[in-house]
Length: 302
Image 1 (cartoon, rainbow, N blue to C red):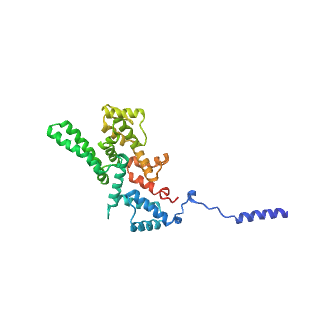
Image 2: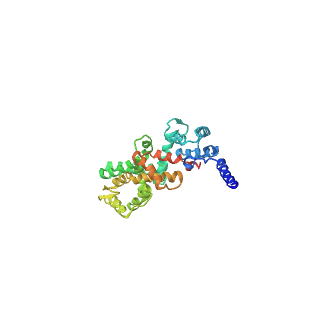
Image 3: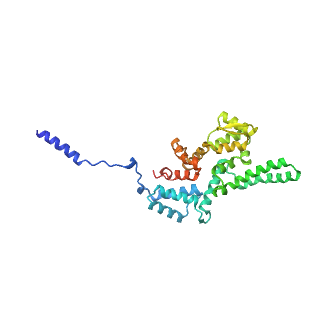
């Protein structure tokens, strides 16, 4: 009987002294108070470089770090900082404004993606002989040749105009990408229709065309033959480019590009699907960038 009493007493004592289990929300709570100032500064530095192509000035760095710390590194505070760089029109020495610097950076990245980083001056050098040809055609009454050259010139001018027009909301990102692949410089880089079809799929979708897609695109461009590509009919090169940049896969390509440039990796299927919910409707590349850049993975806070 004494043994039984001692045994019961021991059990009661054990459970009476046990610590209540702690509940951690989501079982993975980030302890941002432990993030060092150096990590925060590295994050701010990375954001500035990726968005406007330069490191922050000392005053900018101090202000951003203090603002982020005051907000406990909240996702909302991170998003506000990035949104400011994308949209603020306040004058900034050397940049004009953050918005101007952001869109210039994006424009240069677009030319690197599609045009082997051709400068505006190099594009202008291609335009020069075409413009001279237009004058000669006009003087000689070669109206067919004039029309062809004028169209070439317009498409190159569309590339040069795309930075400002995109910034001002006069073009969507799909229009910018269409201009980047439908011009004489892109043609010169890719040399012929065979290479053009393969390159346009690779540059826009990060994959090569299937055999059916290739021949449909090739015949559409080379021979102006009616064909279906991605389930949409077309009959010429302009139709071909229009079909590609209006496809769902084009926007998936934007997500892949954003992950590659910001995180140096491919997005998972789940990550792509999550971002596509809004992107396919609102076409807001800037929002996609912010969604990636506010993460702990990008900030190295994880």
